[in-house]
Image (cartoon, rainbow, N blue to C red; front, side):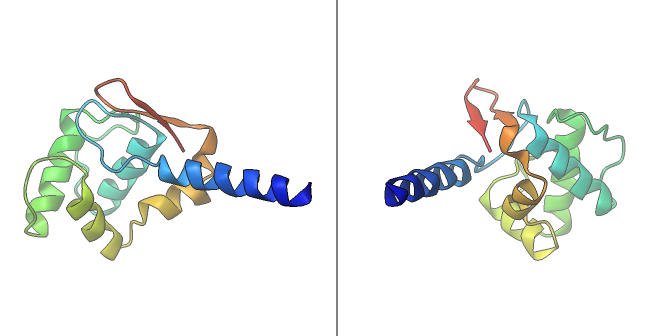
Length: 117
């Protein structure tokens, strides 16, 4: 019985970690976007950003400035390459989500898909 409970707990944790959004783009919303906005401001790139958890034009522009600064492909999206560069500059997205216990938060992609993390 204890083994079954442990397996269920493991699967629940694994599924939560797997659902952390792999990218963010204009139109995305949620606590993850707020974390990104805070990071961009900390990098001195967040001119005009409001910590509202909405990935709008201002957040997209700040991501573009970050991408330009580090010679990345400039598309305004927080995808794998941008995320890796952000991590090497002190922003570990997955760890930040876990540390802040955003498990009760949701992340909404522009296409309406909801990720819980």
